[in-house]
Image (cartoon, rainbow, N blue to C red; front, side):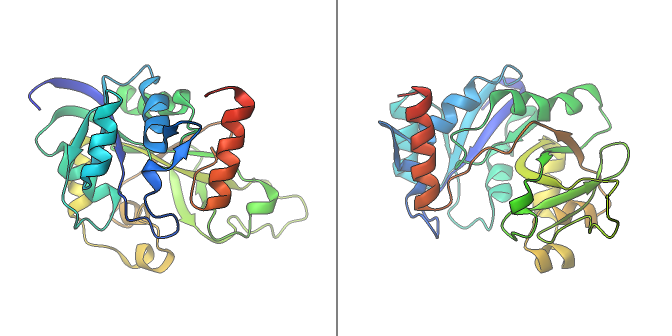
Length: 248
């Protein structure tokens, strides 16, 4: 890993998904999902390289079969953040963009949007994405909401509806958090070494550990959240979109 990169895309992927076992290798119109994700990530213009970080030989073999690069990691990590920290520990890189392995519809432009603030502001440690929250998702605990200060830094993330609309016509609209993150390598290593925090453990949201340790996360607004694959129903929906768009 001696090559110098300014920005790399990292896709953590593992076979042991609870709701959809073997998820990274499920077929989406003739290609495994990990390949669909990798192809989208590779189209981001700000990335110098793209890697899949995985503990599974089957995923490594699939990635290498389509010409991608995989980094083998421990199978004992509690989160994708820990997996990425191991993958970049000996890598000469400045910024790491963490793209979930279950988002085959991720827009490459949103990856560039996450990296941009870190490229422009050397004081910044971490960024993430948000979009306007659909009305039907406001009370869905699986859809994470975020509120920001006036400069675009996250104040809090929650599975609850935030902000609560006490007024008839609220002055602030609800934003949905999109789980794509970009970090400086040094901060990613520090973040992974932090102990889980009380709010993190309460909401089961790892990014709260960052806020509880007094580090700011710059949020970038994008037009919409991509459809991620968590269930067989999601998979059917994603396949239908690929068929509709002719991406076979």
